[in-house]
Image (tube, rainbow, N blue to C red; front, side):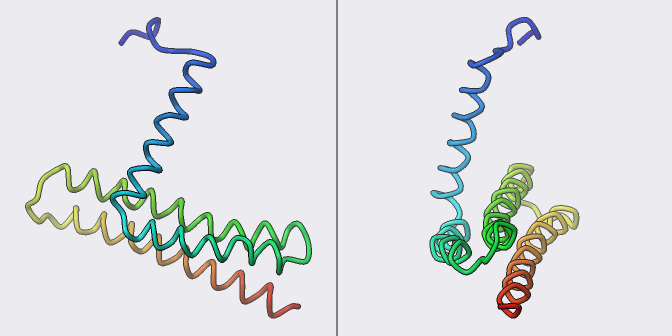
Length: 122
């Protein structure tokens, strides 16, 4: 597709939204971890809005949960690309998957740390 044939303006935005929605649907259908984390978010987000005493606190409490969902989607994307490359074991493929998993774990650590710090100050 030439540069001239690429969609622009509202058409481009609408197509991007459709692709993003498809990404959410794939994450929901194919990734048990995403479904579990989304279920957790249904509890954590309202709790963050309730327990935060200021806009900044509420934003931090909610953001850390949303960040887990974001990192999980990116981790799933990395895993899909690695798996697309082939089923044989390769050290770099394992490293990529492990690093994606570590990013999710780090996000959970951030969630726990932010919640602990904010709630311990109440």
